[in-house]
Length: 164
Image 1 (spheres, rainbow, N blue to C red):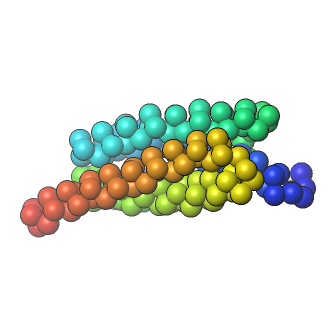
Image 2: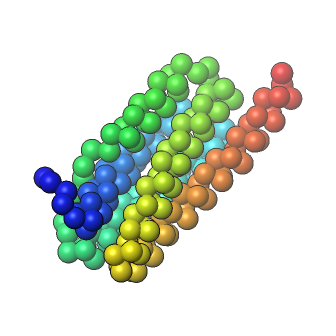
């Protein structure tokens, strides 16, 4: 399909995000299982529920646009997740693996913050305030998840430093 308008580009970006969120819902259970930190496990479980909500919110956005939810493989997210899985397998179990999981998860969050910030702004420019509001909600949840991951990493690092 040729993208010949900003509106089509907007829908393509949403399809990319829709796929990214689906990829994340498959990756998070593996991350939950791999962590040894109860705080981090709880953060991942909470974000999994949020991510399922992000999928539903994107479905609302497609509906508001009169579009059927569609998915376009998000190669960026695919690469970030693959890199995280490799690091997770290579990292020693315990604090080191937990820090590796956080590092990968924060890469995911920053990618999502960039993507949601862009589509939120595009929605505003296209005069789609209801859609912009929905996308802003997700953006704020992604920012909160990133902040929570930073808190987890601080706690894990402090424990690691005391043990060293």
